[in-house]
Image (cartoon, rainbow, N blue to C red; front, side):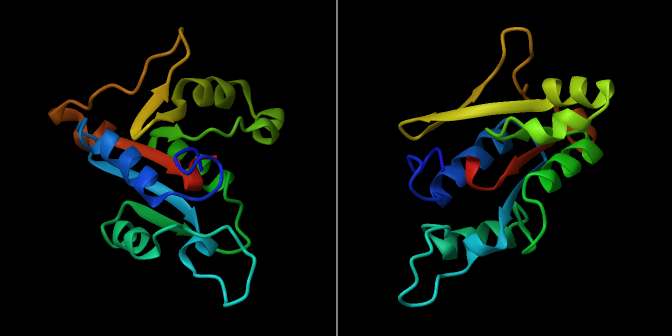
Amino acid sequence: WAHGEGKRFSVAGLRTAIEYFTKRGYARVMAFVSTTFSQAPPEGSTRTRVADDIPALERLHEAGNVEYIPAGADDTILPLQYAWEVQGYLVCNSDYRDFKQGCTDEEEVWIRAQHIYFTFIQEDFIPLCEPDLRCPRTAEPDAWEEEGVAAAEEGYR
């Protein structure tokens, strides 16, 4: 949504964010997208939660960079759970307020260290880093298998 100026889900913006991490050596960059974004609305529908370029979104899915979140699944928790399990970064503008209310101290420290907010300046993807935190670093070739992971949430709220 950030790349689409809050009005649409921009697949070009998603691709730009994925490329940001792949160009920095991350071997696995995964975006989670609600299934509804990948489906054109029925004729006459007023549904706006749809990708602006469904064929391009499908190509990202086929390339292994997009995973569809099943209907009814929590589209906030799934990317969070995946990032936790692979110890990857979580690139999302959600503040995870509901999750933080029930998490352990260890989980809160982890999410603060691994959570990256972002914005777009024109066509450039810009990760926003807190002054006391590290920005996502370039993955070293020897560490790609262990550390080369970044997770992103659908639509970039």
